[in-house]
Amino acid sequence: MKGIFPINKFNELQTPFYYYDARVLRETLACVKKETAQFPHYHVHYAVKANANMKVLSIIRENGLGADCVSGGEIRAAIKAGFPADKIVFAGVGKSDWEINLGLDYNIFCFNVESVPELEVINELAAAKGKVANVAFRINPNVGAHTHANITTGLAENKFGISLEDMDRVVDIALEMKNVKFLGLHFHIGSQILDMGDFLALCNRINELQEKLFARRIIVKHINVGGGLGIDYDHPNRQPIPDFKRYFAAYTEHLKLRPGQELHFELGRSITAQCGSLITKALYVKQGTNKKFAILDAGMTDLIRPALYQAYHKIENITSEEPVEAYDVVGPICESSDVFGKAIDLNKVRRGDLIALRSAGAYGEIMASGYNCRELPLGYTSDELV
Image (cartoon, rainbow, N blue to C red):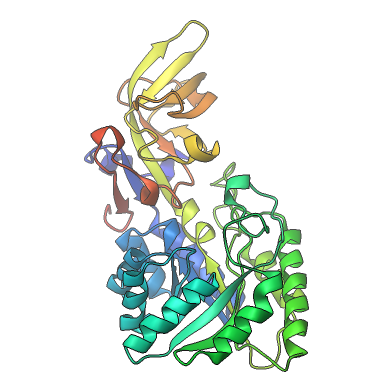
């Protein structure tokens, strides 16, 4: 659907760049709010790691979401974008001292703790400041997710979280500490999950753990189930908004919360992915022995997902109406893996055509690098290009 892009404005910009359709983003956020409106104990945090473009963050903050951060830099970005500190959660398997101190100085809502050594450091640093840090324990539920191996995070073999067997011991340690307050449990089983059965399996595991704690007369105030909801990379126009209805219903129907418990979500990809496209220009069309190559000015430095995960992004020639031909779509980086797609059907490509790589609003601009001494791509919202 070439009409969704302001091509006349694109011609004024230096490629490659990211384009964010603010209408799609706001409609996505409206859907999230609609599906959670009847549950005042549901709290949605946006996972900043998916996209930290300041204009995108500001729109998300304006719609009332909190922020899920995995670094001190993300905490700073969230604060700069106006997220209230008491709606910021700090997760991550390797928090450095300066990052923990930053979170303490801002009085963020909660640290999601992944090990006993981390818990001890947070307690020590909080004591030095005369503060008490809110903590939740990230429990590795040993629940698999039907997704790419590199973005599965909830198995016992993954580096994330505290093992099921160690949960009681870690709770006991925290309850003895003076400068941490044990608030709840945190879980995250992976990303780009489309099988709702994975979330049901997580609910069942959380129910088991809640029963185990209840037997000890412990009821935690907060349960954080992470995120993980996937999107439709094949049909970004047909399904621009993920199935939030089924996603939230999975937890509403299967997670057994106690009276007074709060439920937290950390959605990233499902919020921003479909609103974003990487816009690039065709530099050359090269005829190989058996195929044609469309060589773009964007490469794996601008969008690494295809090279890193073999991820699929729908590719469109948005300035051509000529008959379709097949191309290997590649970038200019001196790496054989710098390929966006092979045997891709595109309207005939000529030098100077604008090519859009769709569904790139998550893990696109944020993962860009300066390899080959390339400049980082800029990001623009549709609000700026009217």
